[in-house]
Length: 408
Image 1: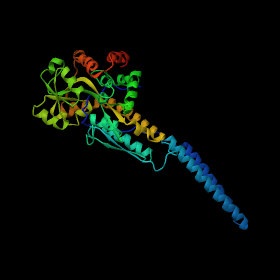
Image 2: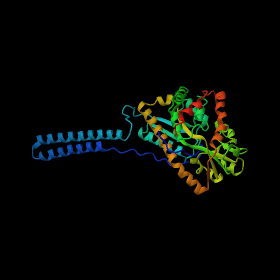
Image 3: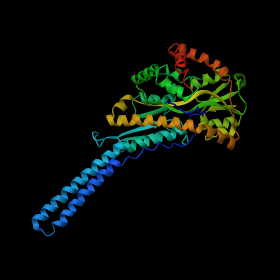
Image 4: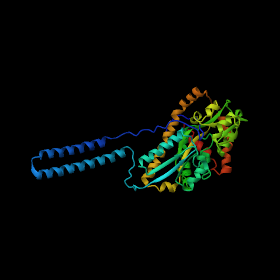
């Protein structure tokens, strides 16, 4: 799949952009033919009744039977047309599913209501509920209302009726190689990440995760590259020295920022804007999608496009919960989460330049490129440390780089 240009960089509790689902084409031709035929049958019956008006009881009986038969056939034809139309519209055939079947799932993540991921997850949930006639009801809880991060993944592993939407790094405690897939400056485009998801190595990681109690519905919910937001121009690692940069409470994020030259300062996002204003920290990092909607643009006026981490999440469910659904509903849920990921990548790709323009005009934000090679050199030790401390597959980073070297 060819994707559009790269995006910027958000934080998990920062807002984004609209989520207009791609409309389904209406295909009503077959239904129209059936309705015309049905109408013709009814008209024929009516004509028979008119001609038989003077023919006595025998004719009346014959006419009544004809009318009843025509009406029955008309109803049958309309029913067939409705079924054909439903299939044409992408609805699910639920004829083999117990009409009383009901599954409620809680979906949890840290993103704010206006962010792209929040809107996409809600759209997925709404579509599944609609197409399943309410049999599968996914209730979305944004902004850490329910367990998130490691705690959210733990809910999935425990077998709860729960969908955790998190960064791939949070699967690293179960399958170590996910640390590499989520690693810093691994990819430079969305297409490159998509290409990695198709490799045998990553497919094997998905399989191992499922064996540990984590079925990955999709891991391509990209919301942009993460970059530095400060009030100082940053172009090289030396420019970051001595600067305290707020990060999420993630070991990967902390190690990445420290390696790049900053002093990583993990804290909850609720405290971040005030911390920048008061000088407790010198800035933060996140995506363009979040920059203008979470208050960051009010306190940090420069964005250095380090693109040090790809902002991406996966949607995780317990395999027993998933496999416990009737097969038509399994397919529906899988298809909707796949379509939602494609939709989100498309939106983020298309909206980035408009978002940058809006940030510049509305908030006076200045964007600048950085010495990518210099920053990348500082991060090499992180992957070696993953091998020695996390137990990741030796040489996996280099193998991934080889796979994507020709992908733009």
